[in-house]
Image 1 (cartoon, helix red, strand yellow):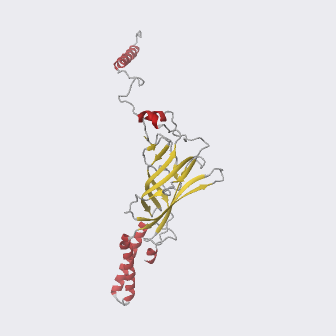
Image 2 (cartoon, rainbow, N blue to C red; image 1 turned 90 degrees about the vertical axis):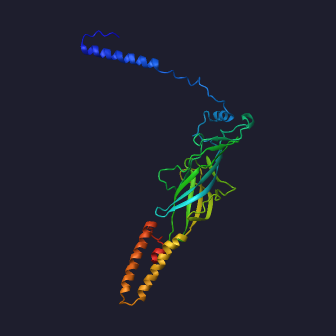
Image 3 (tube, helix red, strand yellow; image 1 turned 90 degrees about the horizontal axis):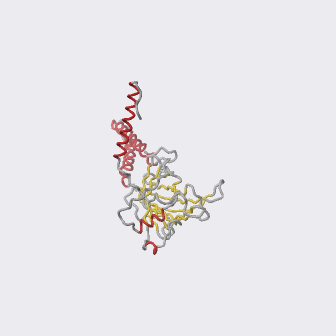
Length: 323
């Protein structure tokens, strides 16, 4: 490019363009060579695990169910309960535990003798297909992510075991009439979100009835009275295929030693103070003072209930009604 313009502005633009060209050539010549990924080799020798993982996961589609469409994928479930928290104001039960799910992946089979005797393979949960087991009666709003991140264990037969930590929030119909000596029953209903029973068949583990309590936190406010797991097939008018769900019926009894001191003792004191007001002579000055103190204590007592318990018609605690 040669600048033939006689005008000052044209000559300036031409020089500016030449400057950009020269700078581009300088940066291009000084930039380091980018190595070709195809020529790079790892600095370590591939293990049997590396080779097997590369073979199994190459062209693996984690969004495709690993079975023929005519065959159902059987998922065996075991829920290990660890801790319960009940929010009376929101009528929501929070369940903490582990969810054990086991199924067979036809795409993840191998012969041990051909792969150095490798008897298991650990894969990240996002690398392979997983059943979309969701809590149907969830109280967590738009979030349906019940499970934490954990690895899956795969065996040569194609069996996959996944045991993620789980947290479920479920609505409960609370009956607080006997509070704080109440017993509550809540239900967790789990099922596949997109697959029917002919595609994903949920089964309760026969050895544990679908749940375990060995790791239960015994220091919880609630004592587990009973847990039952039931499998059911639901049919809807839209479809001919069954939809399988698993329901855990949980019965909890409140442990109330602390509530006896906080609630029952003041309630008994209110009753005695009210009776004492009738026992005093009508013209006694202490009677007005005693009745005034009783009214203040009752107001504080009811204020405590309003902050602790929901205002539900037909479920008012008897201890609050008596006071």
